[in-house]
Amino acid sequence: MEFEDKLAALASKVQDQKDAIQTEEATKNAFVMPFIATILGYDVFNPLEVEPEFTADVGTKRHEKVDYAILRDGEVQMLIECKKSSGNLKIEHASQLFRYFSVTNARIAVLTNGQVYNFYTDLDVPNRMDDRPFLVLDLLDIDPTLIPELKKLSKEIFDIDSVINAAEELKYVGSLKRAVSAEFKEPSEQFVRLLTSQVYDGRFTQDVRQQFTSLVSKALRQFITEQVNDRLKTALGASYTAPAPSGDEAPSAAVESEPVVEEDLNRDTEIETTLEELEGFQIVKAIACAEVKPHRVVHRDAKSYFAILLDDNNRKPIARLWFNNKKQKYIGLLDADKNETRVPIDSLEDIYLHIDAIRETVRRYLDA
Image (cartoon, rainbow, N blue to C red; front, side, top):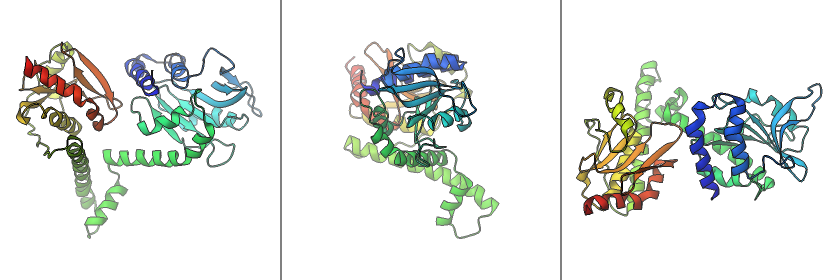
């Protein structure tokens, strides 16, 4: 398997099992050891490569242990500390990593709950672990730009010097991207004040703040939509105007082979169609329009998924968008027997990777 495929497989396992994992030991066995073995490529049963319960007495601290030490040529290269998958990671969880980092040759320390992996080094003070990670890998929301750097820590490649050289830029670019993402989801007062000052000359009163908080959120959503539409035009090589959502679509009847959705549809008052689902629909519709007229491609929302249908017929599903999970999104693709395969996607742009499959599904209905 390719490196990216191994990551996707482990991500799928984490998605399926994380709710059932309740202890730190179970997190290690189910998620962290497979990460060390399949992603990083080290033999977890070879003590010359992976030493569990690694001990290095530090000052008055005796017999404390770090969960795993990764060794190469007898030297510790990475330290890994694990917490249970149901808990959030905090720097306070890394006390052993801080102490052990300074008394070993390790240049990389990892704090993980099996889903999120925070990678640290010593950019701020030599031989002292930084307070902030230079790389944050979330298996349920993988940033593809981080994959080449993660590969450099694998046994096959292992290029620690290259990782350290890139760490400072990774640290700040990653932090900035997370900050921008947070502002897009829920603009802070400082961000609203900054943008308001660019377009409004009056005093920034409480009423103005409330008004512009709503306007900034709306402007950000429209900006994202316009960016998606621009990419559509470029990718499809034709003029394209995104259809305005009517907002009055009825909840779908269950699409074949998904009995769970029938239960969902009985609770239609809980269904909420999101902007992201509508943007995904626009992409799939534009792709399908190479085969059929635009008006024939419609959408219906259900509790579990967002269905895209031909001719408003629930027996002719073109694709399904599984966007309710905030950590990992999927596009459901249908084969000739209408069996669905859910493919993880990291962004709406990844839908473009499935142009052929979407158009082939439409052609099957036209040929039937």
